[in-house]
Image 1 (cartoon, one colour):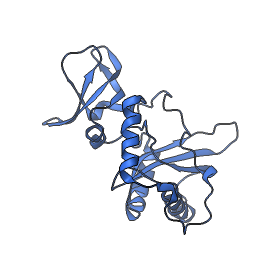
Image 2 (cartoon, rainbow, N blue to C red):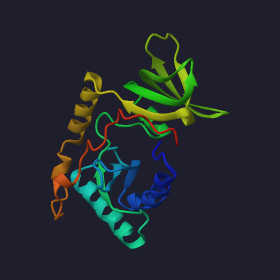
Image 3 (cartoon, one colour):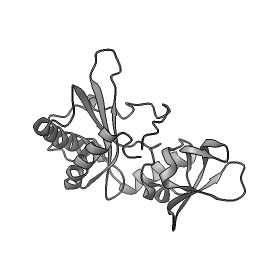
Length: 212
């Protein structure tokens, strides 16, 4: 789910080592079509710090500069595009198996690539992960169901935390625990305009692409 199309998966293989050098993880890569006729495509990269799952503006800028430098030299993307680097946001997408463990106890919505009990979309409270002989499964307490359900991680094409009071509280507690404003760090960095990055660049409610 970190990448859906073959083109995105190829880019992810390139960008992961670049992010690694900055102690960052790539959460998701999306290469979208133009928002207007004749316009350039949008390459959106969500990233976070390995240490605590957060990221600040200057770290986004450094990752953007590193990726831009590689793209300028290797030219792996055909045509014009606009690069956007952002945090995953508080109501973040869940793209890796470990995300479902990290955010256990929070509410999420999940979409599968196939029918399960007559439907593809589910909503419930994350209850961790389980390893089985068939592979990794996510556990979720579904609305209206008494027993915890297990879903193969490989069936999931989209998953996202739901913005509610519990998530807002957890986010506020995490920020307070850090004890500082991340955006105030790295004051030596120059040449970055906040407007270059759009955390809400894409609508998470768009229909999912079944190509994982």
